[in-house]
Length: 67
Image (cartoon, rainbow, N blue to C red):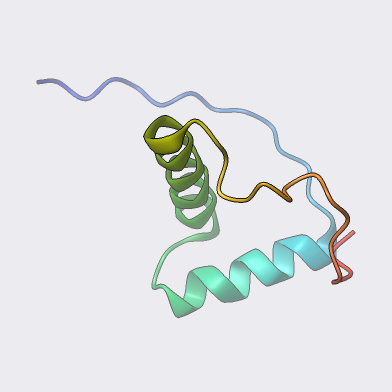
């Protein structure tokens, strides 16, 4: 099975969110791009598994300042 080319999309993140994802990526030995792709893949997998996103509270405001 041949790899299909990946789509490139522009993505704007706040500096705080980028820094959080960057630190998380470093902890997981991934690039920032790889971390974002991993997180999105996990959300899609979870949704396919049980018809929901990772959290039922996904749309509620967060307690942390990442804006």
